[in-house]
Length: 291
Image (cartoon, rainbow, N blue to C red; front, side, top):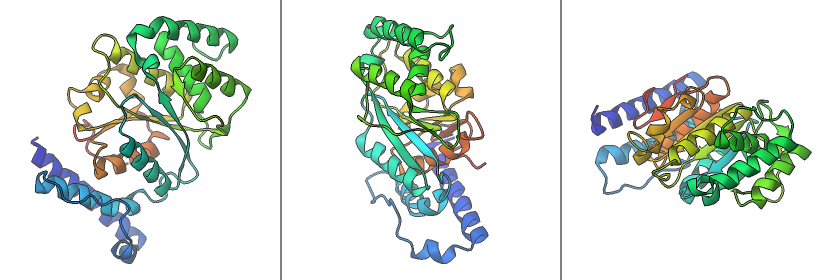
């Protein structure tokens, strides 16, 4: 499928979603009168791309409304994540009725292959302290991902308050310069949104990302990993989709666009009940989750 054909399909999907919600819920006047939450200005890109982005931004309030009501989302960023994208995603979570419990920034120390010994040592120490909290056969990055998941996430859909165990783990991760996090975090979230950034190291970087995501998924009700259009296809998100963990976590590429941000929120809502799924510009399961 060419890029133009994909954009045409994407617009058609969002039109169908918008029309279904509007007619089914009797919200036609609301859509006409409501100010769009995020309408991208025309750019030098192809007219089809500019239209798809503007349209998705215009219908976003209707498409995501109520999708995450009373649900918390922990945002985990990879070094190099676009700050504007992270902020816009948080806004979309709020527009869907949810809330960001906290933002956790992975550091270069966490994702750098040359720091594996540090990550392995700390993970082993924490696993010993937190008896039976982590699978004994977990690999270095799966283990540290599980520990991070225990600190920030929960499989309980309603979320849970932080406790002594979660606070102790997070303090250790922050103290070792593996994660940057707020000083006070009150709740653990059922959903984790991982926002990709720079390309991982050529040697070992993909395995680190896959291990971290695998570990996070063990502790959360649902995980969604998002990246830009370049991350799809043969990029880092495309390579993650070839890993076994892709059967459990959802992925979305094209998140720099309005359509990608809306798709990310819909994928989060879906993740509470349905694992996996590849969506976005090059997603094998279509541009947007319809179920």
